[in-house]
Length: 350
Image (cartoon, rainbow, N blue to C red; front, side, top):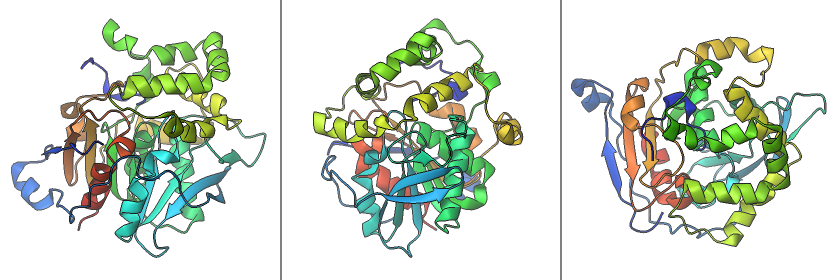
């Protein structure tokens, strides 16, 4: 895959043989010894696909939404907020949640706006896919559930959301796990052209900028999502049952509108909401993230993503990067659940 993808443009975004290559960097050597991420006791290896379902999804009014979320673990435990990407859903964490719950964590896994049972409280609310709006949803969810802070972990849209939360509301994030690292961008950055090979990887974004693309995604939502899964994780041999569990979340009546708006907003082809303008100005400066962080990359990620060296300096607190080997693609929590859960535990190690 191309190594020329600009940092703000990354948009998508295991097996028993998974190994971890860890490389703390971005801090002076003296600081690393004092602030590097320590390790929690190792988790037992869980084979991907061991679990297939959660307890019944709960619902809560939060901000402009009624948010559906899965929950596991003790109500009084430290919180892990796990955020899925596009086009995925809460089942990306179906094997991660029991591992964290067994270690005493209260695990919260919400359907993002436009997915699953999450719905807008008003028909008049803009169906806004702006990344900062999704981050604001998660802060509203934490408020609604009386959660003061959490380890926030995600991939794809979920990683971007987690990055924004850590940058803008660091007091609400006790730790960050972000697949593909620093994904905060802006409309100005999204308008910058890339070399042709890199632009090719963004074909779906350009497709969504057209009326034909919107109509195509509306008509072939499930087929489109399956194709993205295959391209983003070319070595992941998921079965129909696994895909279909997640694909049901794409039948949300707002899913297409949120998806199209998200990608059009990134290119400056759609406006966001004025209430987020001040936050967007802050995000456009590419603010550093100071909360303890572990970034993750799969060695077979077929989606556009930056090289770790391109974003290491954006993390100014305790920091470590981990590469997951063995054919892990774009969806590490589902392809390599033990490694992903271990990162959540390790980043929260005090």
